[in-house]
Image (cartoon, rainbow, N blue to C red; front, side, top):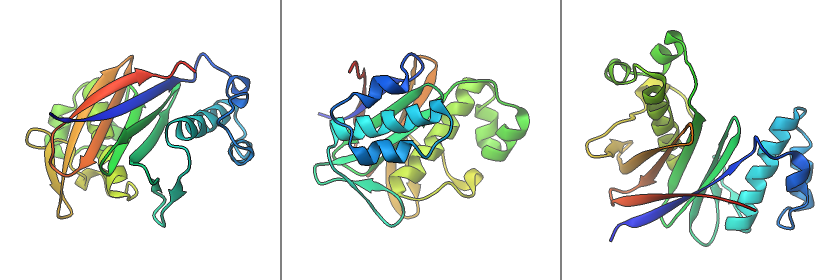
Length: 197
């Protein structure tokens, strides 16, 4: 039986900041951190992210490289216009979510290798490439640097990067591309659910 990576989604477009501020899971520290953002949409994304972490993880710490860790498994968070997701699993992982939208050729050329560019001709495929790259560096615990050199596709979803094996999957969900990458070559299934707090 394959492992299951659970991705919990919360849409922020139909919720305002006050919807989250009343959640008992949030701490005063979460609210203070969100107050550093000027735009209401940015504050809502930050609070929704904190809400998901508190509800599904509880307490966590942040490593030197900025990767969040907890004692009871592995998790990673991503947010994009109108959506925040948290991926939960039993191995180191990274998740990235992007709203599928029109992208110009200049950005496609910047992000994609020649092989990837030939596969990323439409916006949906481009965001598959982008989220696969981003989820890989998040699984590794690094930042996004030379984006063209980060592999997106692999043989059967498996890729070798920096001496480690990773397996990735992408799910297209409600106008978004959601990619998760897990360290190790073991197969896994992705379960996407909405949080209906």
